[in-house]
Picture (cartoon, rainbow, N blue to C red):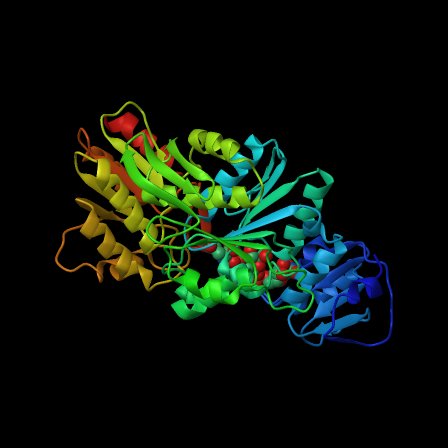
Length: 487
Ligand SMILES: CC(=O)N[C@H]1[C@@H](OP(=O)(O)OP(=O)(O)OC[C@H]2O[C@@H](n3ccc(=O)[nH]c3=O)[C@H](O)[C@@H]2O)O[C@H](CO)[C@@H](O)[C@@H]1O[C@H](C)C(=O)N[C@@H](C)C(=O)N[C@H](CCC(=O)O)C(=O)O
């Protein structure tokens, strides 16, 4: 594609002359630059991409897009915000792939991964070819690519969509993080259906206030505000029981479909009953009521399933297919995943790493436990510090035994993170074991018949980040080993 053809998609930039090189690839990492690349200078937390402009030129870049002056002899296009421009140009470069498939975006504090996976399984039951982008991986057909971000940078995102189109994917389902909405990673994405799960405290280190966090999440429903934003979503699927929904209803021009348990909504669950092996409920829809008997457990799972049912109804999948699929849906790895090695107590690994998700998981297990509830919990380093004392308090108020430990301390001192957690505990007892492996072993050695151990925070993750190093660590494998060695 020629540079001027790409620039036709921008309205706010400055450039000297009308150079029109042929662009062979878009890159934001100078190490990936090839002959003919267009290089975006992105300011990161470790590096400033502007300092790699010269290196990009030397490696064959033919154009630089930058926010600041750079010293190169190839054409430089100056813009106000490289990341937003990158998203718009990636959409154009890859020939607007999201206009060629049905795109479903799921946002909210908790439930994004589960909802996207349930929608994926329902779509597949309906015979559709799907693509999926989220915290765990990007999945196109049977190919899985592991990811660093919940919502990848736009270059990877649009390239993945292009590949989905080439592979005849009909429905792409993606998690949309608030960071991605704020940074503009999803500019240019043509969302057909935007889904909201819930909004509770998280990421305040980034957004500052809940008000700002709520506003940013809302961008998925109101549109992303860019002139070339192809569309507002056509449909908004909203959780009627979450207070933020009222704000989104007021500000979106999409057709609204609500789901919920408490507030009157289009899709509802009534008469919910739960055991350790599944959940039953009455599904109420505008076209009739149905008894659902599913293998997923917990009120949060009912909400996730309602969101997925509403989304798939909007996506024009027959209700009989949806219900059939929901009843056979199994969990997502690391989400309420049971580690069963024949022991007489239950071990559950869950990704709960926010106050609300921790409370939900503990409340759920309390409903069917007939022994002690033991929780192993830590809080991430270099992430929202304000949630640490809150999560510790939720643990001690809802579990019989609370074990505080480490969860990706990153550059922070693990002991200081634990102190931040302990500051939230007023009077109740807890145990602190900084080494996560030892904490899990302690939990297993103290569990008896009928007890439930919740190992919270890491879920599907297979690593522990301490300082600059990433170590292999999988809660499921450690728990299995502890059971084998101790029981
Ligand atoms: C703060 C932030 O958004 N960081 C993202 C950023 O990394 P960074 O700022 O460290 O980048 P950097 O290493 O400083 O480099 C800056 C630029 O120089 C370039 N560079 C670097 C070295 C070099 O030799 N040549 C070169 O060109 C880099 O390619 C980059 O373009 O660019 C990376 C590559 O795209 C991202 O993976 C990374 O996300 C990190 C992992 C992150 O944690 N982001 C958070 C804020 C985030 O986005 N989270 C949300 C929500 C998660 C949730 O829901 O819990 C998400 O969607 O993941």
